[in-house]
Length: 115
Image (cartoon, rainbow, N blue to C red):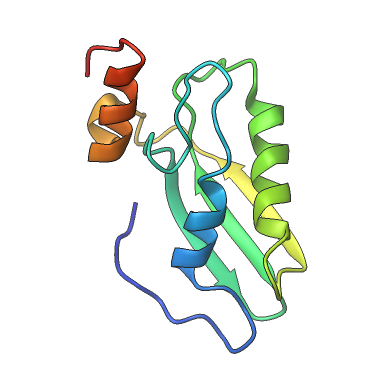
């Protein structure tokens, strides 16, 4: 994920605010939010209130893809100034535990995962 901070147009959320909102979205199969899992590859806040989110999942055939998409759209859609949310799933680069934040790894260890 691009860690460079971007300034949002007036009245729209920043990339940081979008990422914070996405922390309520969890993969139901893994008890960690999608940000700390390292699933968010990009956030683009555009004029007019459109937020594009590029993300991946832990596996290509993830059975909860539609649920995660809906949860992400709802979480970000609640932010002031957001009129539309587009979530695009990509598979390159593939997800791996190395993409997780230190907090995500800590949470996984608390649930008995070896990361």
